[in-house]
Amino acid sequence: MNIIVLDDEKNTKEDLVEKVIKLRPDANVTGFTDPEQAIAFARTTTIDVAFLDMEMPKISGIDTAKALKAISDTTYIIFATAHEKYALDAFKVRAGGYLMKPASLKEIEEELNQVQQQEIENPKGKVRVQCFGGFDVFCKNGERICFARSKSKELFAYLVNRKGASVSNSELIDILLEGKEHTESVQSSLRKIISDMQKILKEKEIEEIVIRSRNSLAVDKVAIDCDYYAYLKGEVWAINAYHYDYMLDYEWAEEINWYLSNNKPRLFTAMP
Image (cartoon, rainbow, N blue to C red):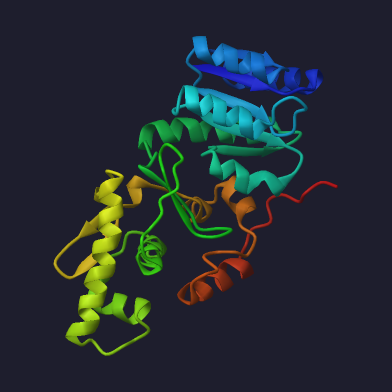
């Protein structure tokens, strides 16, 4: 396993390198204080795990992560920072971990164990779904998926909200079409909403992320990287990314947002 550690503070970098070597003595661990050198190194060596400082004067940790992901999408990014405010940005570049400085051996070990668990489960999805801070869907290459209809986007959001459970056409009418009577005209409107959603997914060659049976729909959870799902698993970065803003555009999400707001674990407190 090839691991890099990037921090513009030399002492901080050396401390983290020492801890990683102690935890993974068989790994090749290389430290950098210059992001450009780290990126150049990644062009010649396959990087399995990258520990990145978020705040650096030349190139930010987020931009460095984007560069590393462009070289190899399989690089597992773990951010190290003194501020929890960057958690949502970390999700946007598909970071796997998020450490608060100074990180203890136990915290680093937990993040490295997550790398191994991901390799076993292979959870990397075909799309990235953002439920916190506004609902959005992105292709694996980072392209934002633009739905032709707001209701088609809401349909996909509701399926994500149901976490892989099948949703009947009858329930979808009640949710998306404001409880209108289930007339043929209303059912036709639902079919159009479903068709528009499937059309854009097919254009992006990811139509299999929605499983359709005769009268119901469901998302394939394995095919989705989602901040909400990561939150429910107790992943630190996702918990820090949630700021009482779960799918705020949709009234049907209010109950879950209320529940999350009143049961949010307090893992980290932002430093002044």
